[in-house]
Image 1: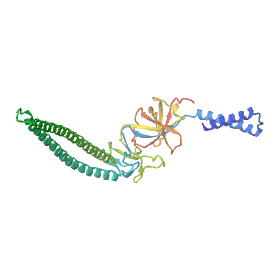
Image 2: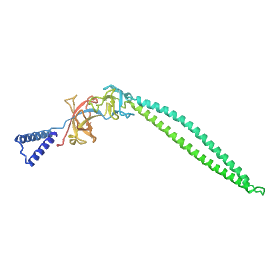
Image 3: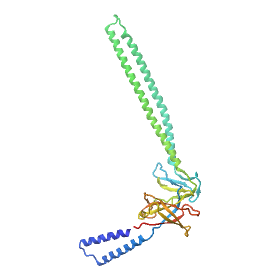
Image 4: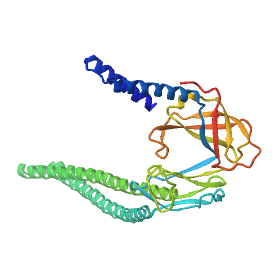
Length: 347
């Protein structure tokens, strides 16, 4: 593929020189012809060769352990079960560093206790203010009732001046009653809003506690299946992940595969992916059993490409293959196989 690209670029450059009427040296012309012949021969040879993929035995009942999302952008692997060891379902297989999350959990629990105490104190204070406002309103109503008495009395002995003073006292009492009622309503709203705001802080602290508790449970990973442990490949260095490494959230750390429901997993180069299709028959050969061949079919070709820096800088598509009939052999996850698709389409 790269040779074809270089040849095309070289021919375009050659045509450009000719369009400018620049004399091309015979040596360069001979080189162009030679490379064109080599490229054609290489392309014909590549198209005539069958596609052979490498893969490994896996299980459809597989647990993939990924690094959990923590409170920071990296998290350390404190411990992992030894690679190749068969673990039982329910056993611990990986432990991630949770010191920061544990500290945050304890801080949030202490903050929750303080908030609940503040809530109680605020509730007592606001209730006291509301009770006092209710008392002031009752007193204001009593003063209004008392001020109404002299105003309601009709007597010739009461002067106009005295009657005016009594009316003025009633109006003042009514004004104080209105102010007391407004103060009571304000105190009621302040009590509701103040307690609601403090309750929001308490609810937020409780949610944070639940979050950190759930996160801490994810930091201790147990096996979902009974089977061997296989370490994953570091996406940057191409080496196997091990205890003590710092990894990023969602990185694959290890997998636990059941010793049943065997399939074959492989990765196909983006150039070769167009030669494969779902349901296509394949021949499978085990490195451990070189004289035996088995048949299968492609059950899944992922549409999401993955980077495999340990192979090349190109994109690779995951492929899953099922056995037409399981080999009458003892299989183990991780066994190497060679896959030859039948009726390969020609490019």
